[in-house]
Length: 177
Ligand SMILES: CCCCCCCC/C=C\CCCCCCCC(=O)SCCNC(=O)CCNC(=O)[C@H](O)C(C)(C)COP(=O)(O)OP(=O)(O)OC[C@H]1O[C@@H](n2cnc3c(N)ncnc32)[C@H](O)[C@@H]1OP(=O)(O)O
View 1 (tube, protein in one colour):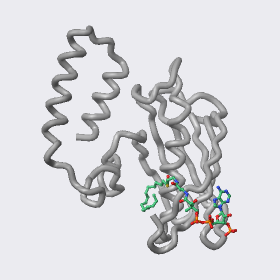
View 2: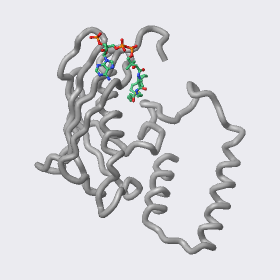
View 3: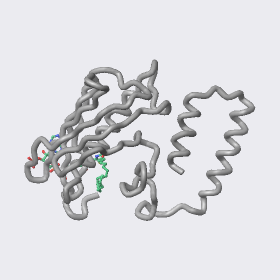
């Protein structure tokens, strides 16, 4: 279902429907929304954003495919599809920190560690993330100091550095939201 939603969003991003077609599409979407109105559940019960669901069950972040992961590092790949376009064939600038927060955050919480949240995330944009290109993402633990975990990451298009990032993830105290 989420893959169908992603494909639909890509098609929306790439299309120029007429006013009549837009109105027809809006009516169809409204009908689909109404169908889920009585299926609303609490956050804990949802499939949305679950790590165990393929594609994490959401369409917010581009799908991250993990190739290798251990407690200290992760390597994966990602393709920004048409929905993520910012302009002129490049991914929107906000989608790069989004991807790093997801990837670095997952690594920060991997290896049996307690849950943490992002305290800061610094991103350097080195070259455009071209829509449709398969990009490689690597991330690693730089240091851990008490509740603080510093994670760094790189996004590459072949040999070209697209962006790099550093994040501080602070382990939550019991009961901390
Ligand atoms: C989602 C995680 C939880 C569920 C995980 C389930 C596992 C599933 C696995 C995977 C999921 C997918 C992965 C996605 C991950 C995404 C993560 C996010 O995007 S989280 C949303 C955005 N982030 C926020 O909303 C934080 C808002 N901020 C806060 O809640 C607090 O500020 C927090 C927790 C970050 C720290 O607050 P304090 O009260 O607990 O701790 P204090 O005492 O302030 O700081 C502790 C230490 O950290 C330093 N620190 C804190 N913030 C800093 C900063 N901005 N810069 C530098 N140092 C900072 C402090 O100076 C202190 O250092 P000293 O112990 O004194 O050495």
